[in-house]
Image 1: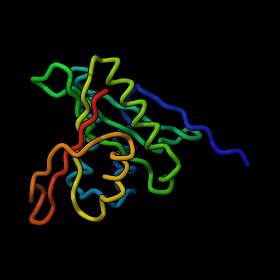
Image 2: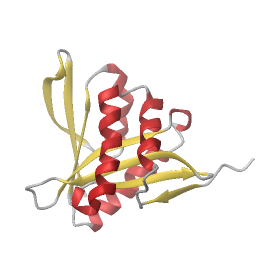
Image 3: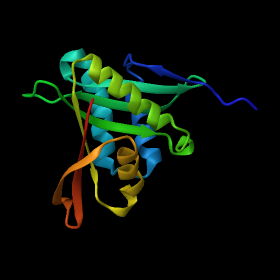
Image 4: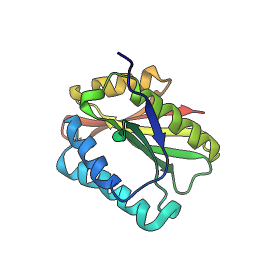
Length: 162
């Protein structure tokens, strides 16, 4: 049986807000407030265009959105970008979709004159695979902000030069 082909889309469409919400919900990682924020970034991009500062890449399989990445330039810097979100539908994790979304995000950031990418994630045990994902893709731990999200839940900030 031949594996389904993944296609990547850079254009943001109004229906993407609901698609992003479903992907974020499927992961089991994000709380309702975080899921709302993820969807709001899509809405902001639709209403403001590139001026929003949010750029997206969507992974699609057989016409279904199965993953996405969101990134943007960090205000007040010359060449630094945040990778805000990278998420893949829970049923399709482990199939290198996230790795390809990360690669395509890095390429897009580089094309926009970005030279450093920052990613933040939780220190909770649940996020150990997320931290390993970034380390395995040449990101290094730059800082840890103790008890940032909640007592016992620190923010880990990773960086990669491109």
